[in-house]
Length: 148
Image 1 (cartoon, one colour):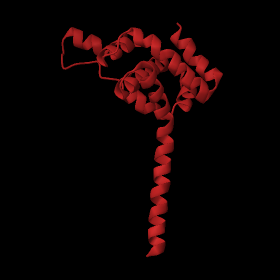
Image 2 (tube, one colour):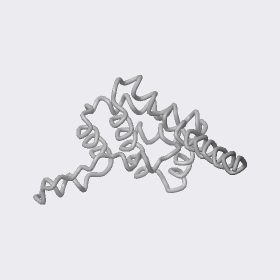
Image 3 (cartoon, helix red, strand yellow):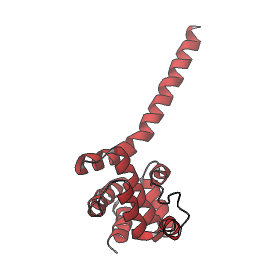
Image 4 (tube, helix red, strand yellow):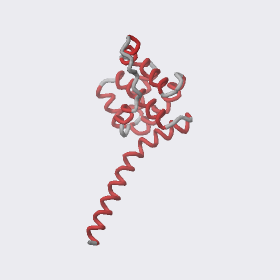
């Protein structure tokens, strides 16, 4: 009985440690964005996701793979991008759903309650984060995308 309890507790602590390790990298980026820009976690994650998606559209698959390797839970950021389409099936609704590039970023920021000026405030924080996690070359890939 004691061995079983010890085994269960060990498993619990191991799973807890893995969950915290996985979350730590994301938390660091979200923390930087929320503290530096005085925004919510949802705004931080969605805004970062919109900009990472812009990088995904702009970089080769191999280059974006390097960025993805530097950012824990990249899929979580991309999933946090707010839906741009509404229930409207009219021309405007269809056009909004098909936005790509920087118009999609600014539309996502707008949907998150963030101004277009905030895009320029997010980018150096993202570049710095990726630079620290993936190295200067990987941070440089994002810098190149954001300064087009």
